[in-house]
Amino acid sequence: MIPIEGLPIVTAAAMRAAEEAVFAAGVPQSELMERAGAAVARETARFAMGRPVLVLAGPGNNGGDAWVAARLLAKSGYDVMVAALGGAKEGTAAAMRAKWSGAVIDLADAPARPILVDGLFGTGLTRPLAPDVVGHLQRLVSAAHFTLAIDLPSGMDTDLGRDLGAAGATVTLALGALKPAHLLGDGLDRCGHVLLDDIGIPIATVWRTVAAPRLSDPGSRSQKYTRGLVAVLEGRMRGAARLASNAALHGGAGYVVRVGEDDGQGPNAIVHRPIAEFDTLLEDERTGAVVIGPGLGRDDDASARLDAAIASARPLVLDGDALSLIGRDVGRLRNRAAPTCLTPHSGEFDRMFGEREGSKVDRTLAAAAEAGAVIVHKGADTVIATPQGDVRVYAGGSSWLSTAGTGDVLAGLLGARLAGSVAPLAAAEAAVWLHGRAAQLAGPAFAADDLIPCLPRAIAECLR
Image (cartoon, rainbow, N blue to C red; front, top):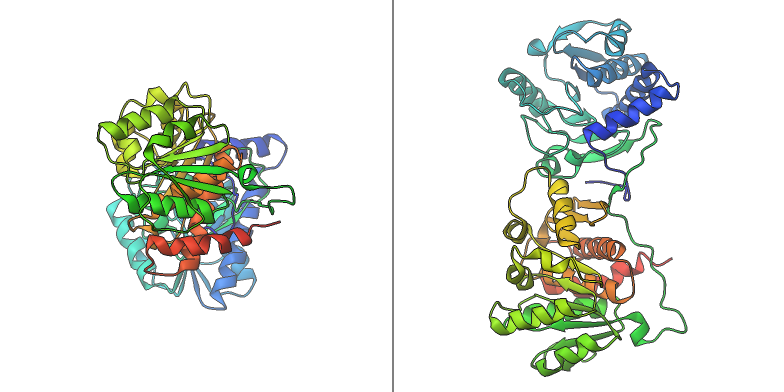
């Protein structure tokens, strides 16, 4: 769980570059390591509440942070034991080890203690841990009541979020900035609750975690068209279009049109128009966004209507069957002058863009550049990327969103944001946050329909 929103995210290489910039500005590495160790000691003490502490110190800079934390905890009166994996490398980490005056035991001989600080390996690990290290780490983490990992749990691939033998942590204290592994893939399960201390390192990046939107009341001069008209194209599965339409209506749109047969279901405020009027809506400049794909079907009629939408000058949200109809032909979207947002889940993404190398962030960025569109790559680690290289990541949301129809709700909500003349990235970020917050408000075991009445409550929390 990431407790603070709008936080910077950097790769291992970018973190090293940021540190080098601090050193070049005159801050010695020893001072930065002291800051990191002090942050670790502070957070460990907050959770330890006087219990005995075992600190694991690796050979690199992560171990250097651990030696500082051990020294400061012992100075504060804690019963601290240090278990080392090999000798500290020359340089600052070795200097910090030399300042430790207590006993040092080998990792293999370490006894379990209630509080464990994992400082074996942090940012930059790309190879699997040795089997004996994995065994010792698993034993100690399993026996501890609480484990704090320094920067990352030992055994996590920083950039890919792959598990390379990690035993996990109760709390991970990210140093400087969040890393992709805190938010992606196996990191969601291994990192536990993630905290951040910037330790005084300036970070310049266009990769950030999703933040709550800053919304305002419509204003006294607003009317239904200025708040945004959303057209949702219905297909064979009418329920999907109903969900998207209802989400658009309760997500802030001023006017929602469901294009298809009027089955008499849904809020009376939603206007129904026959399929024959779809082209008219595409030509109407008052149409602020078109949502196409939820329950659309994949027959020739669906394909023809998708072609018409892509050829139009209207902002588009493409989801579900629309993505399957486009398939690998994503280049056809690049020449659209109006904003285009795609909302694929992992299966749809792979069918459209192939199983690319790299992290989910890397793959989503490449897809956004190829399509010339904003991509909302859904999942427990939802990644939003733009063709310009901006990234937003939403992680740690409700796992109960893994149920049918929730993607249709997100598509309608995104349509409402776009129709209100919000820039595509900001619209996507707001929609993802509101969708996730509605899920939290809905509680466990909800159906997609249950998200709809929670959307106004989520929006109310963002009004400024």
